Length: 263
Image 1 (cartoon, one colour):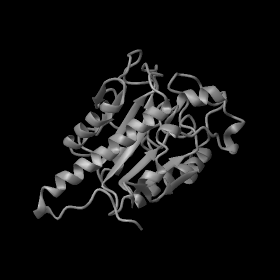
Image 2 (cartoon, one colour; image 1 turned 30 degrees about the horizontal axis):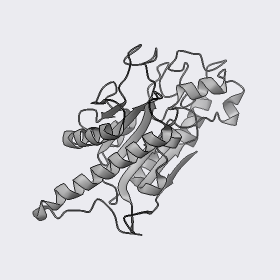
Image 3 (tube, helix red, strand yellow; image 1 turned 180 degrees about the horizontal axis):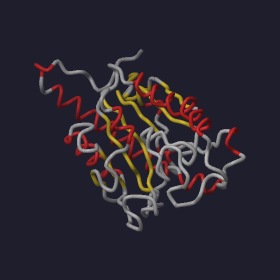
Image 4 (cartoon, one colour; image 1 turned 120 degrees about the vertical axis):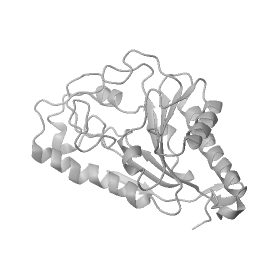
């Protein structure tokens, strides 16, 4: 299931929302009933292939203008892959990122098309619809394994506490630098830019509609999920505040407030 929510939060004694579109593509744990009988993975293996903790860390629906997620497990369908990415760890996978086989038999072309029609295309259509005048930045939200898995850009390498990516162009470099700096203030460790991830398909594809950035938080147990959530929220609020201040300093640019008025 894909869903989006546009809600109003309360902060500072008045109703506001951060003008952000949050995408959380890998928090799902479900295998659609039509596929369950052919899936070899245990519940634990399904969870290990996804973004553990993402559902809790990025539970920010009440803080942002739009929020999109899916209940379908990453091992079944990866909406952060291009539709023609048919690698083992591609859009419809044959193996998990830990190189564990997923299916008893390869999925038929008809079943792959069903996944695209019922889950993949609706997810991206929802992101496109949410990219309106009330949103200034899309944020694709992830968690990452503490150490790079076998199928990954950094197998066996210990990862930083966080990573902020813009694929060298999905949003201004200064925006990424600001967000990385603010995120590092709340995390117990280093936050890198475009390392080990440079930004996935969601950020790259939808950057034609509005600026996008990708956030990855390490699943290392150095902080609780609640503390990581607080760090992300503080960084996003701080980023919006700094953008609002910067725009306010350029009166001739007709600045747009980073906190929208109530609906």
